[in-house]
Image 1: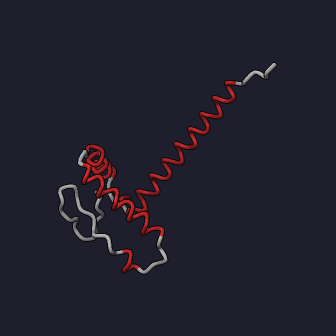
Image 2: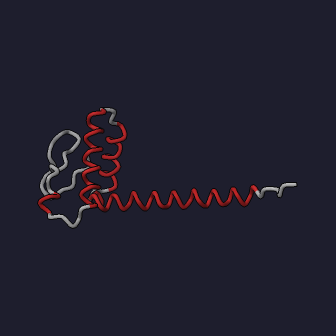
Image 3: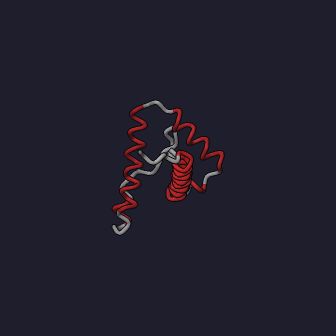
Length: 108
């Protein structure tokens, strides 16, 4: 005869795991905001930029953003290289296609 399963214990373990995964996701999102310099934006500006991103259905634009994101992460992995090599990515553009004023962070 098999030992009965303790469903309550298993459910609690799954809930704990889900809570840990959610906390890790929030931490990673916060780390990403800081790493990109988006922490200099107000919460309203950041939320607005994220809403524009979420509403965008243009596959070409999304692909370009994905390439820039990949270049960002690739550049972070190569921190030991010279800064001239890391500056080969053009400055970020705003959703309207205009360049941000110098010294500000683009959220596109």
